[in-house]
Length: 465
Image (cartoon, rainbow, N blue to C red; front, side, top):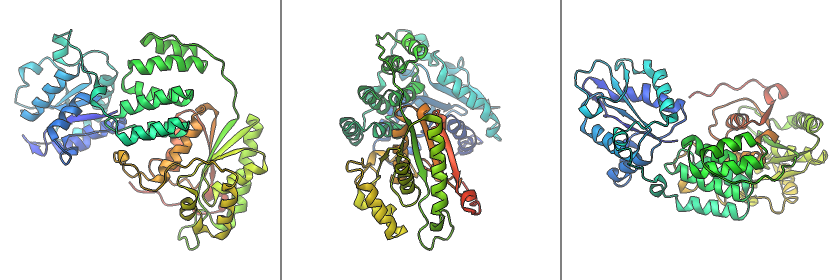
């Protein structure tokens, strides 16, 4: 979900608008998981007026500060009111002597203390949430002209060619987890809704109903009455055996789904864990001589899963350390596994195995030989250009989220995330902490094998920031 902020810049009229943004507006948007900000983000790229017009049209939410008589702010607000019937929120500093323009005097706005803008954070967060959930028009233009209709936003949200190509390739090869990953990565982009729509359709066409449901529900959060999303969800929920949810979706729009039976599946166990420490590592995390302890802990956890669920299938990468040990223990317990590689094998072994030594290289190639058609995420470590909107994101984080989506594609309720981890957060999207949070938020089980306790290591210092 994306927002656009209409506001003055710098200090004007005795109000520090940068402080208002830093202490009030941006924290409220962050609390709601909403990306996007002001025209300052687009000054360096192309025609600022064209970009501004597009953002005023396609943004899910516009926050406008009308504390002072700022012509640019009123101009942008007028454009928004003429293009979108709802999703606009006004705020104004208390105690201002200038009068609100006549055409806005009947509109409600949130009042804040310019000397302590953060004191209104809870009220703004609540107000923005209510605005997004409301079905009532907040644009005076649309209220006074009830026959006026909004433009179809999809016409103004072209998808990047590279993104379409990746979706097409993943769909052609039935790479369900890769499709779900692409849907995740579209979030926060200007074209987020159309990216989710495309991925949702492809997942539905591939009969990956759990993954399609997750993607299309993400689209419906942005636009609860989206016709495409609700039509598909009506069918999906029926096929998943959830008739009440199907009826809810179909009450939003008309549809005519059918209902084939669902079947039980083995428990999916997704493994994530530390690589074995390279020689000379300053702060130990997985010392090489602790491998037997890790192997026993992984075996015990897998045996518990088998006792609870009867059968299982494992998913993991092939880095030295936890990944390879997980595959080996699964083989000993007759648990089939699937191997996923971030990079082609000859590149992957150099990046993620070789630093640990020759024996790990040998074990990698023995493992890889069992998976002649193991899927590979990318040909190189360089991320595609359409991912530029995701900061602090690497091929390794993307690979973790890819495997997570592969596991969740068959239904989060059937997934256990097994993490051999020291509990240290701060590694951003796709890191172990993030994977656990995402898995649990979708209803999966998470089990952590604490390496500090397991190996007798000191807990790592907390990551700042």
